[in-house]
Structure formats: C-alpha cells, structure tokens
Length: 183
Image (tube, rainbow, N blue to C red; front, side):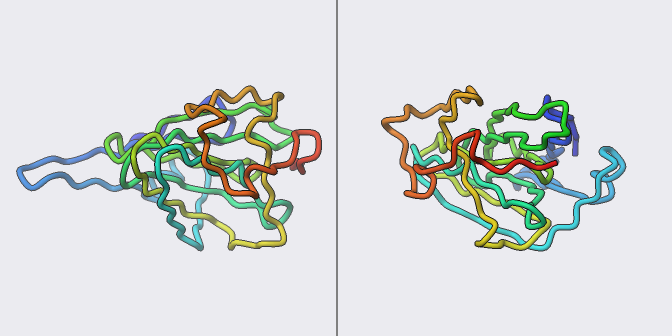
C-alpha cells in the first residue's frame, strides 16, 4: 500500500496496490506494520462500522469529544463519496482547516483521520457502502456534530444544500464557535 500525507497534519491517504489477474484483483487495504513504519503512528482499532447511503446523503460532521475521541480509518467498498475531515486540534498547525477527498470502490483509497477531527461525507453514486474502523468505542454521551455549512470552514460540498438528505441531528450541527475543540 502507498501512504501519502495530506495537507492536514496527521491525516494520511492510503492507496492499495492491487494485483490483477483473470479472476479480478487482490490487495491489502491496511497493514499495521507498514502504516506504523511510514507514519510513526500506531493504530489499534477496536470497532468496525458500516453504513449504506443513497445519492445526496450527507453525513456529519461527526466527532466524539474529550477522552472518547476516535481515530478513524475510512473506506468505500461500493460506490463513491467525498470524504471531509476538519481539524479541531487547537495545537495543530492545520487547526480549523479541512480536506475533501474522493473515496470510491474503484479507486480503493482509504483515509486515516487521527483523534481530534470532525468527519463527514457526501454520497456521489446511486448507493455507497462506507466502512470505518475506530480506535475507541462509540460513546453516545460524547457524540457531537459540527454544522456542515459553518462559514468559517468554507467546505464546498458536491451536493447542493437544498438537495442534501440529512438526519435531524446533522441538520442541527453546532456552529464553529460552539463546537468543542481539542487541546
């Protein structure tokens, strides 16, 4: 697998090396030893999650506050999305910045997002199956949502605001000023 640092401190793009033959292909989507050697980070995942969404769904920007914070390894096994990560770490040189990366079954990319980030995605295909591994268990009391349209972030979503399919929680996300930040 190929690991590339992104413009956000601590966020890594992971691209598999696919081995094709007449049957299809094989690839490793993640390997702890390769990841640790390349990044200097250790990823101990404890929970795997999966969601299926249709075109126009936007999920996020989610995070867990305080000690319940989670690092995530995200990927798409069906369809395509634009994945967004927002740096909420005050001590980071990229605090308040975001990236948007297309992840799809076709490109096979994954994104590693460390603790201290808000995360979300918009579905580009008719249907998308999104999978993510986290290094801390889900804690409903610590769950937070940052407003998708916070003007301070300047995120250009690939779905028009009027066409977004949102949960009530995601539609009522916290403003940038009101969301909890990390030290």
